[in-house]
Length: 263
Image (cartoon, rainbow, N blue to C red; front, side, top):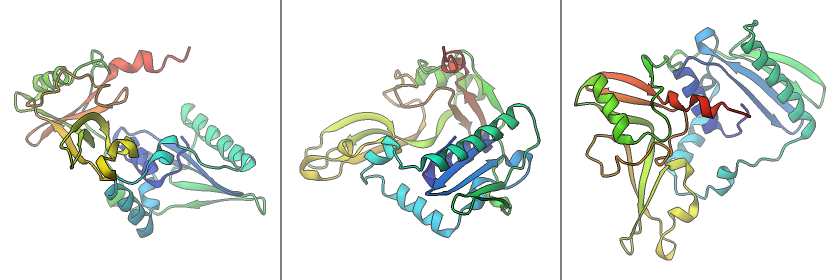
């Protein structure tokens, strides 16, 4: 999967570790390219192990300033060099095929491609233990739950597992609504913060709207009748259910048949 924003790569890396799965990263800059497999469960560093203090500052800046213009980010556009991009994509595909066919891999290492000198060489990232995450356990597959399941129905399943005190917790902030600070008008949006566009965030006179956020569903909400798709949860999402110190992870397995139907 080729992504070009550090924060997005970090998100993919953390989610991949949560389910114990590998991912293949590729990137280019002009005539330079890099390909790497991250699979800490099989050995080697995680993507987060490759980050330095500057990377963390940039990520922190991005997440602490959610009201900045995001049209370019949402469009996902970036200029590329066709030859370098093709070479990197080919190596990414090759690594993915190795994973599929259980062939030998070198996770935590990078293949660097210098298009200026036509050199190809490898490097290995150091492992930073505190940046390696454990897989989520237990993950409970729910074939009856899909994007059209309501929040209330999923909460009821969580309480069947953990009792009446169970709540649902997301791995992201959900923006329930935006409130105009001048007029007091409230607009319901139900989107992840990172997916909000600038026009939604801008209120009367160009002032920023206040955000009504949550990451937890307790059962007291007045929108429990909304579907999981309505609240911006993608297919096959995994939602944490918690009661006190006990937690289980609920997978929207019912999306599997339709999501992977490529016909």
